[in-house]
Length: 350
Image 1 (cartoon, rainbow, N blue to C red):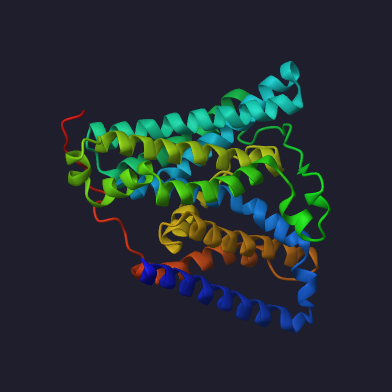
Image 2 (cartoon, helix red, strand yellow):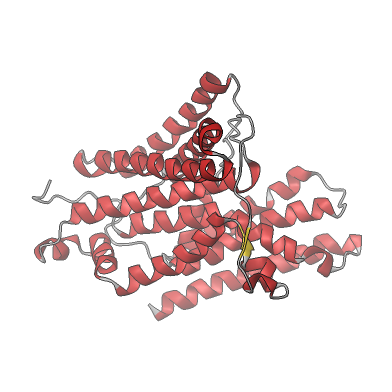
């Protein structure tokens, strides 16, 4: 455990050093003061962008820790993003904008959780290959969301809908720099900042967390102790769905206010980056958040560089986060995958 923690810290450290070096090489020809890049607004944007990656990563972490590899998280994010906009747009005239966005968030969580449950039934009850089932979930929602968008709105991209307002926490929001970064934010960002430490505590110090770890490492021992392995796996998969629901809604209701169905949709690979984040974080929710924040920071960096006038193709900067993913995969071999991840378990509690 200590060795794994050291490896995780080493990986994060190497990536941070690499990012600083790349930043220095890119910025030096333009004589840009680094303080012009790393403003409070930059870090606030990065924190917002980290929400879907972090929550998808923590959800996927729980599922895989229990023994079920859920690469369908990308599809769950798509389903949540679409549902949040659909429900918000259809209810705003009845319940008002403030209530509509919360209904959109709730609906996104419900749909994403049901999608995860479907994936769980396919994998656990019917013993399907988890990777193939995960890909199927992704492809299904990748096709259905733009299709229903055309059916309902007559176009692949939805109209804009109401979004969450940022909430300033009294007193704390007045703290210089830190108040703007942490205590003046969207509700989904606050949810992420609460969920990450809670997920870490539950996984490390509670009976349920012990059951999740045992389900992915020694399911026979868990079964012998009288705990249903399949129920633990179902619960873990549904956690991944619920967290993906919040993450998907965060992309649409916290900033954009629109579902984009073109290409890979508004999600655009964040579910897969979330998977890399928990591998990078060595299946630790806090480490997952750190990796997600790094990826989101690189994404925010390309936006910030364009804002201050760097005359470089936006596509180049847009590739930076995905280049970082490749760098992380180089260190993938140091990550210890749960022994029974990806394996179906036969028990008598079906």
